[in-house]
Structures are given as C-alpha cells and as structure tokens.
Image 1 (tube, helix red, strand yellow):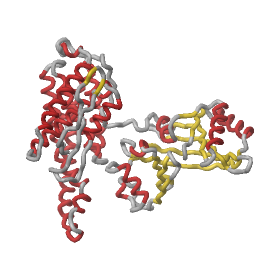
Image 2 (spheres, rainbow, N blue to C red; image 1 turned 120 degrees about the vertical axis):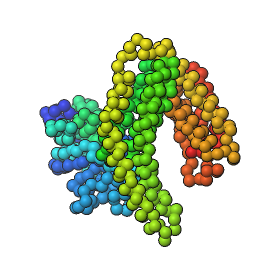
Image 3 (cartoon, rainbow, N blue to C red; image 1 turned 45 degrees about the horizontal axis):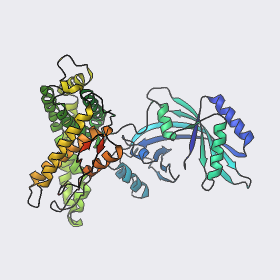
Image 4 (tube, rainbow, N blue to C red; image 1 turned 180 degrees about the vertical axis):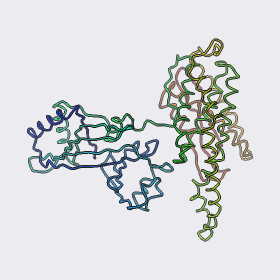
Length: 470
C-alpha cells in the first residue's frame, strides 16, 4: 500500500476488457484469486485517516497501515472480549503506542465494512523481477441500508526501487480508458456508501465573503455551531468517549460568544434570551465534564505519588467513576428533555426562518468585513490592556480574566477566518492556542499573538502579550 493508485470501472464488462488488454500487452504473471473481508476502524473525527493511517480488523487481526510509506503493524486479537474501544484496551507494545499517539482519548468505531474478491497479478521486467502489483477487485461495501454497494476497481501497487516502471504502468492503464480515482480504498468505499472520510470537524468551518451582509454571515456561523452540537448529542448519550461532550461544550461556548456580535444587527432581546438558554445548557454539563477531566488525568495524578502510595488513590477514583455515571445519566436525560428540545427548536427557527419586518436592524445589511475588523480590533485592544496589567503580583482572578478574553478573541478570529489571508490568520490563531503545561503558575507562560489592526484584508501579527498563563 505504498502510494497505491486506484482506477474505478463503470461495470464488470469494462473491467474484464481492461484486464484482457493488460494481459495481452504486459508481462503479467500470477493471476491468483483470493477473498478478503475487512472492517475499517477509526475515531469519530477520523484521526487515523487524517494522519494517513488505515486500521482494519481482518479475521481477528488488527492491521495498522501507513499509506505513505507502505509500512504496517499487526496485532492478533484474543478470541474473547470483542473489539477494543480505546488504545488502553490493547496489550503494551509498538501497536498500542502507535495507536495511542494518534487517537489519544477517542474511541475506535466501525467506519465501513468491505468484502473483496481480488484477482492479483505481478508485473515483471526483462530480468523477471516484480516491479509492480496489480489487483483487480470486486468490492462489496456495507451501506446504511440493507443493499450493498459494489465497486469494480483496479489497484496499482508500486514496488520500492521501481518508480519509473510504476509511472509507465499507470500511464498505460490510463490510456486504456479508466481515470485514476482520488484517495485510497477507505475513501472510495465510504463514497460508495454515501459518506465522506474526514468530513467531521469541531472547528468553525464556514466560508464568508467580505461583502456578505452581516446578518446573513452571523447566521451562517451560528448554524455551523448548532450543527456541531447536534452531531455530538448521540455520542454523549451513548457515552462513546469524552470528546463528544467536549466538542459539544466548545460549540455552546462559541455560540455564546458569537451572540455578542449581533448588537445593532438583531434586537438585543434575541441576544439576551439565547445567551441565557445556552448558558444554562453549558452549566448543566459542567459536573460531567469536571469528572471526565479527573478520570482522563488519572495516570498523571497517580504518577505524582511515590509508587508505595499510589494504590491509595484507587478508592477515590472508584467514587469519581460512580459520580460520573450519575452525572452522565442526568445530562443524557437533559438532552432528551422537552425543555432542551424546545430551546433548540426556537434557536433553529431564529436561524433558518426568514426574518419578519423588524426582526433585523439596519446593521444586518452592512458588509461583514467591516463588522469583522471592528469587533476583532476591539477584542484585541481589551486583551492587550488586560495583558499589560499582568505582573508578578497578579491574582488568579486577573489571569483567568485575561485567559477568557484571549479565548473570546480567538473565537472571533475563527468565525471570520475566511475573510483574511489564510497564512496570517492561522498563525495568529496558533499563537492564541499555544500553551506550556506542567510549569508553576508564576513561571508558566503561553505567548499569545493577537491582531494589531486590520487594514483592507490584511492581518498584522504584533509582539506577544506578556505574562499570559494558560
């Protein structure tokens, strides 16, 4: 799987025709047939796929493949116990370590199942050495319904040291008609089942244009945040992993921040009503998130103690586990409650239904670029003022206030990211996220870059704000 290239055929007839032409025109050997059944696994946000890794369960063996260099690791699963959900469910060793470094706190989930009938051939050179592999595959893909999608494809697999021969092979195949398909077998299989690899992100993913009316732009931002909330509700209720709640809460916080943008665009009572609603939703999830954090840091807390004392923490964490189970039950009930449903329905009505006369203020028609520059500049000036006041005598409250203000500034930058040059705005956001962990509060510093001013569509990065503790 070292940079394999895939070609998709419209039907079996086209596939058989190309297979015959290849056999007649190239020195192919082998013609070995085999059946293969694979279940692809990944996290909800496709962390493995985004790192160029594919994880499959094949007849009770986990195989982790690197699509970049073709390397792989395998691990036999025990005959009992079912599929592992987290990296910590695996035995210690390279497989577990590699998986942990990518998926972190996320659970492994089934992504798509495929069953393939593979016709494997070898391409040889004049010296009789194999210079490439060719796999003709009939692939059945599990979909969301009872019907299975069937894909007919050709996989051209290079052999190290024969890049020129592989390039000639792929040109030869393309000349016969089929065009190369983008992606790998996972993305192709997901596409056949109506899905897309890596389509979930917890980030604010919107595209605005400078002349877009401010009212329209703000609703686009808020709709994106609502979509993130809704996508994570089921994972919270099913208690798949803690990141579902984390992403949900971040979307709630960003929504509350985005609501501060509507002054002069929508009536003030709209802001106050929904800020109160979302503050209540966030507050009801606080206890569950706090308990999640304690459990996620269990290893860290344990290592703070001498080995002889570590067992003494077990009763404490047993209590936390029980309290967390109750907190999860209560918040799952909240998400299923009539009050939560009514709040979301009212929010959807505001976001999606056309405004009646008087529902929007004159500022709603103004270009969003002006709003973005004005609000970002104000947030920056406030953060800078707070940051300059920080010194060795500053209280925890002062530091926390600065931290929150910088977070609000970052949210504004993320909302309007598409309006500014990508390299500059991403660098500013990166500085705002940067932190150093594990240091003493008085020594720990996270240098934060913020916008100095926005002129035209340019964003300037100023000197770092002094003394920000994260």
